[in-house]
Image 1 (spheres, rainbow, N blue to C red):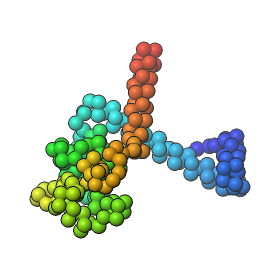
Image 2: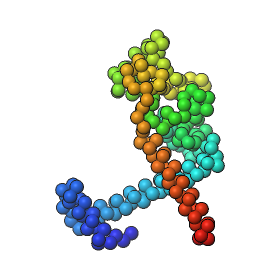
Image 3: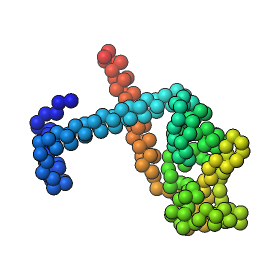
Length: 205
């Protein structure tokens, strides 16, 4: 991709003013090339997300994923994607998807990690070791929601904020996450796209 000298000089000015960096011509060209490549990647990702949003309007329950391996957007486990599912709450393994379907966990928590805690984050945020957490669960002081695997054994344990905010002495409501903000942005892009398509059809383009 050819970048005009005017745009290169604008970029040079940004590096100079914001980062106090005097770039050589080669460094400037390299930076411009990297930025355009990064922008192209972001554009492809956004386009895919818009396509998924529009598809969900026709398939609101979502669809199965056919890739070989992947990482669950909720539990974070990397595994075979056989049974993986995508819906408005994101990409999930079959165990987490089943938990959402059966109401073990609300789907909304999949888009905001501040709405739930794992054993690891209980330790990181509150200093509660997993052994202590299990003891507190047995005493009924902490409430856990257990996602099971195909054999009925625990796959992933979740401590919802709404179930435990009093014990943890935190606010009940979690701040809006970047993912939730992004979902709103994708929805806006999709609506803008649909309007442009309708306008194009009316104008005969």
